[in-house]
Length: 171
Image 1 (cartoon, rainbow, N blue to C red):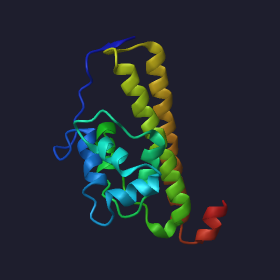
Image 2: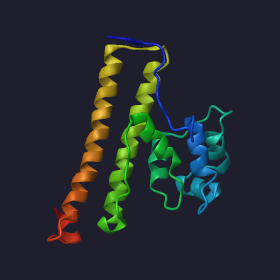
Image 3: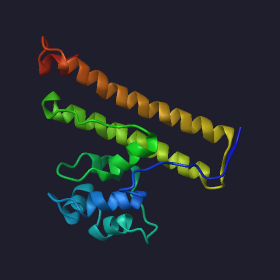
């Protein structure tokens, strides 16, 4: 079953486009500069600046998006935008849950979300989604769900008062 036409997506008025949200994250972050972000991602600052520019066609790869999610001190506008596209709301996982584990799990979820968005964009290039593309999108969406559920399950295990952080990490 094919879907025709462009999808209608409600996004917050604050960010009418992906580039606007990415610009907010990388250029307007108060605690970290664009150059520092680019250095942590292992890319040239001009490459990052072009990816944030509405007038440029350059984009960041999914590995850079997942890396972006791991940088402390950035404005998370790009995540807010993705959450709005998915019709979801995220919450902050407290840092005392084991920062390394939750950061890795969050990066995996972001990579899965980026992969889903890339598949969706690829499928919509011709204005319709064929059955194979629809199944690929569903499979990738299921992977995003599994990643987020793993984070929630981990948080639930750690939140149990009778268990220590070390017990939760080892379980």
